Image (cartoon, rainbow, N blue to C red; front, side, top):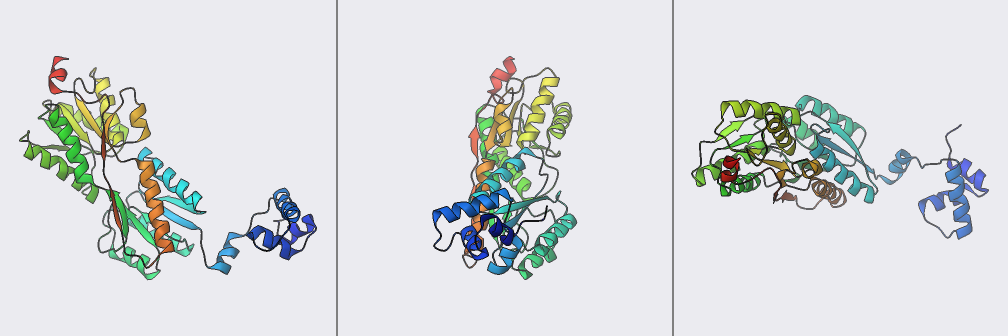
Length: 339
């Protein structure tokens, strides 16, 4: 079958091309009968307006880019869901790309988005993002919002998390339960978000006169969290609680406990970070710092659309506060010892 055109829709509906154009654009004084006839004809022929041609005529593009790291991570999946739902409500589409935290790969992907004339970009800057990548966005005037991390020397809207306050909250929760030997588990790069989280953890350890901080790195995955916790438990058997860099790491830690015949909350307390849906649905519901990733994605998309529509507005920084959600993976120290 040939690709349907305005002319073929007009022939099918037995009206003029001008009438079809008016109906599809929602303009003109067209009778309801004629409008219905045109829409039915378009549906029978599977006609869809040529968005590229419409963009050239109007100068408006309805596609944006979303650049994250490890799109398979459930946290990112929930963020993407929030982003795409909000964009859909505004008549926009998103191209979702995974830079894998690689600055070179990120540059290629941003160039691709610029070449395809996307209307804007939401991105998590890769570690060591070079100045020329920032300059590329400025040179082409791409409306963009940084997410979770800032890009050095880049003035832009930003949506992120109060990371330091969040891990202060998590560590305080464990200290209030009587834990003194608390470790920080997860993350393996000295990036802004992790450094801020570790700072919050360290601050409470010092303020409450707790044990010497133990920081144990690992990748942000369930498997890595399981393996890293097993190693941590052998190297530091005195640790009775862990603050994790993400929920997937925390779920891995609880799996390691189960494999060792131990129970989270009764033998070692575990606090996650993210508030993904899977954390609440685990066999042992996870105590976590929830930042509501779906809503965070909606905020991210809303910020970009606002920038596209009001390009001269002052830049905004929106930081989300974490909320402690108490599950089954934390408990008082004396109850842990009693087990």
